[in-house]
Image 1 (cartoon, rainbow, N blue to C red):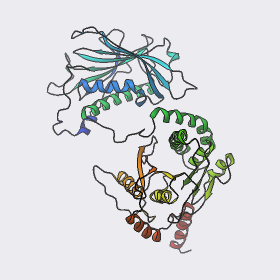
Image 2 (tube, helix red, strand yellow):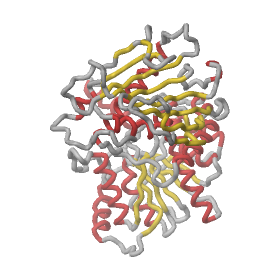
Image 3 (tube, rainbow, N blue to C red):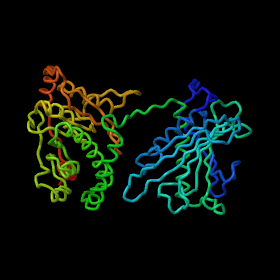
Image 4 (spheres, one colour):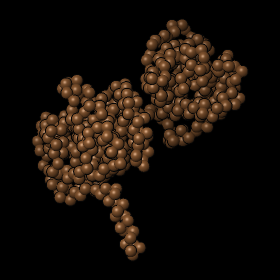
Length: 483
């Protein structure tokens, strides 16, 4: 923002970054807010932060453009206008340097209205301030996710004329969270949920400022193959259409909220990929979901008009519920021997956390024809022999999951595919999607892969079902008890 900002790319002099994050211990004034030097404003929390003002402004600019990373119920923002001041500001000017009007677009469009908000930037030698002020006059008109105040503000105080900062500390300031209440006679924040929300957002600002100082870059890059807006729109549509009913009718012992909404997210992603494909081919692709598990992903894709079915080694209770809504043979019990499996009439093979089938799916797709594509989301570390005895490198820079996805991608490349990769927006930490939809131009048979497949196919044993495992446990228990 300012030429006065200090250079934050200097060395950390051997400081462990974790010690910076552990410094979060804010002074809280919820029950008795402190009057600010600015009229109408009250300080409700403040925290020393080990970074400079440049980090503060980088964070604020990011949050202004993408408020959904701070307030999850928001889908996106639309910047309506940006006005920069052309006046010269002196060292202690209180005039804004920029005013932004934006629309906050909610995810729940049927329940929440778009909120118009002014975001105003202030900067002088002593402090940097951003003010968020909704264009509403009544507290009752605010959406559920928005702070119940007339305005709120983040302040970075450079520490002039204060004894809170240590003089010998570099790159240090004070973060303040300030509010203008709707009722000046009711300034205190006594509701615990509101207290938690304010403390959480201050903590996020604290962490992001430090990350900006450290030059933090995300390890996971989402939305590489489809736009974030396209995916989020599809997800909200599919979630509203199927989510509540699936959760209400769940018959498994597992938590429906985890499985239902995770599979809705995966289905939404695939639907975006396929609809983009349809715009070129003018027809819907067919699919088979190998190792389909509870069958939810198959159900969602079929319900959206795509022809396909799911295969698994054992059925699930929920299958009966799902198949009532669709074809009875939509979900099929079948023990798959991947070395001999081919699906020449199918255009997409899916492996969603499909265990021992995951490394085989690129090979099966390659054998199924020139037009067969695949998507796999690896989970457990199975090799081609169907066991979890795979030896994977594990280092500080490359974890086992990364190493396993590289193993699967290597198989896919040897099977003739150009691999694409994306991080899915799902709660699981096993969230990398590997996609093969383009064959390599020189697609010759890989001799090394053929040898590996031949050896693995001779030793491959399909895993036991949960039911078989339980029967085996009971049998072993009887043997131990001498019955």
